[in-house]
Image (cartoon, rainbow, N blue to C red; front, top):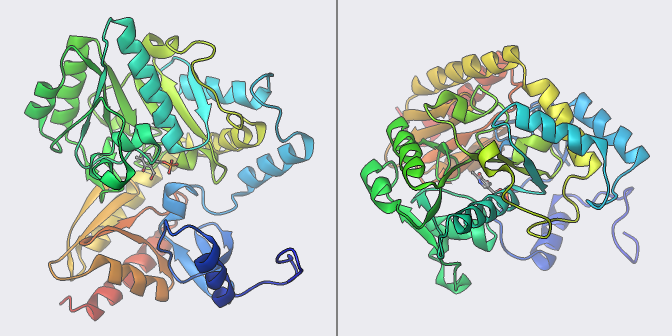
Length: 407
Ligand code: PLP
């Protein structure tokens, strides 16, 4: 190591990397004891050369697998020509991506940002300003109890369980939570002050819980009655994850706004708030902005991602492989059931089996998954996963569960 820091020629190894993390990073994450150095397709390798099958894909980011050649080419080509100029000027990838996102979904305008939480922040701003336009003085955003929308103060306020952390208060006012899938409570909570209902079509972070069609229909109807916007957070469900480009396509409703991030950039940080025409002209110059947003590398990467994902053959395969994965898992001792759509799969474990311990055991066996709840594993493999990799993952989960007393 040089006096100023590590050099590329001197890999540190896991123990030293852990020591640096322990000393210098804020303690916001518990990490698995692995130091990944390379990825290709659905595979990852750690610093010691051990191979892993990745069924988490960077939490639904690397949906085309690691280092997909088209994404790598888009990023490297663009990086060699122009990396950043700011939003004070035009760049072509930004405009082409906005057109593509709009035309593939709601048909209005797009605001770009750098993450999921920022995409929701933009949507909340659109909703509040839209409500002020209707004469609402204290706009409210209504969400379901188990939802996750991000960590900035706006999206955190719309994440009811985390928003109760008084140590981070005071929270932003104007957010209302109702019990999950409780259509009556939702209807009762939506009134003249409602700016928006903000919903994950399938709750991801809380353990892959699909929102019922009934709740979505009531949300749509209630929003229409008061002139509020229906916002779908498609940050985890979008970009093909559920077997359609957007999850809303498989529901009976069409939202007014969708937010996207994660897989959109194929590994590059990018978020987008996409509107229907009715909400497209709400924000005006000066209302919102971001220095890095819409940069040519991230937007160029996203165009390459959409070229690959917005393909009926790939999307059909996501639905078929998802069914294969769930069928294999449901046959395993120790699995109480599965939830989700496409390749967004929650695995409910039988009573007494600790999902976090199973996740740690699977990491040791070379399978990357995560445990968003004490009784649930979450599987988010790359959409390009192959049938034999699905079978291998199910086999590893089965072997692991036997070690936790499943029979
Ligand atoms: N919304 C949903 C549904 C998410 O799953 C996440 C992240 O897990 C976010 C918002 C926040 O995205 P980010 O972590 O990119 O800010």
